[in-house]
Image (cartoon, rainbow, N blue to C red; front, side, top):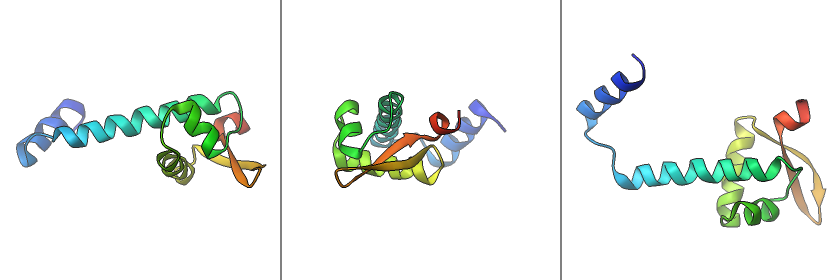
Length: 93
């Protein structure tokens, strides 16, 4: 089962997806995309990435840790007591 069939089956079982959940998913996706975009120009600390992505530093830290867990981001150094993070593809590619 793929795509639209899976969505239809989910809606039949559980009802429609709540707007709050969809809004949270949208926020997570756009925030992580903005963080990755900021890291395309080089390694960033959490405060630097948060400022460039226009999100709260606490949220940025949470997203960066999630991206580290799944292998998208790696620690590449330190700057004034903050870890610097880079996109893994930038390091390997």
